[in-house]
Length: 116
Length: 108
Image 1 (tube, rainbow over the protein chains, first blue to last red):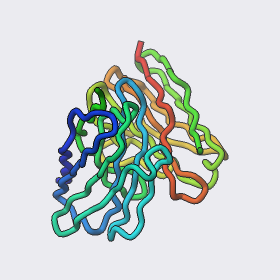
Image 2: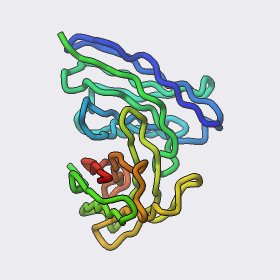
Image 3: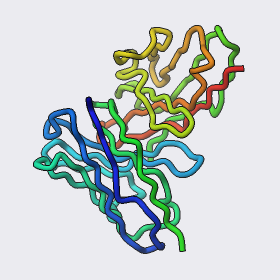
């Protein structure tokens, strides 16, 4: 059974940093692209970033470019999202997801709140 | 930036057919996928590559595509189908993903 478990969310002040982690199990992690998708309170889904199975390609939505970094550790079956220079508008539930050309499995999400 | 357009809401009575559209300039070049999100839950894939249905998704869920518009059709709508539905695709290069704004399906 595919499982994706996010961690690392919490409350952070504007301008601060946070690192999200996603532990994957139940599949050959090193064979799949992975993605982060977020959802602000009461709002729709927003794609944040994708990373290729070997980490050689990374793509970001414009609004996080230069502030967020997606990475992965295939030996530990984990994907990460380093978030710097956080803004109030980054407040959201952040979902880790497995990519098969589309998202075929989602984690349960971790809440990030950016507030002073 | 690339955008996908969905109607904010659709309402149908039980047993009727619900159709949710999604339009985008690159839709003719890229596949679209559909996700169902019930309140307080993570999204679930219901249609991928315009028309394909994942295992475990009821046959009443179907997808179609015509040029820049894709459509999610739910036949014989049930109360349990009440949820938000999101289309997702990519820009013409296939590199940058985008979600539609979401459609709230209400079962009257």
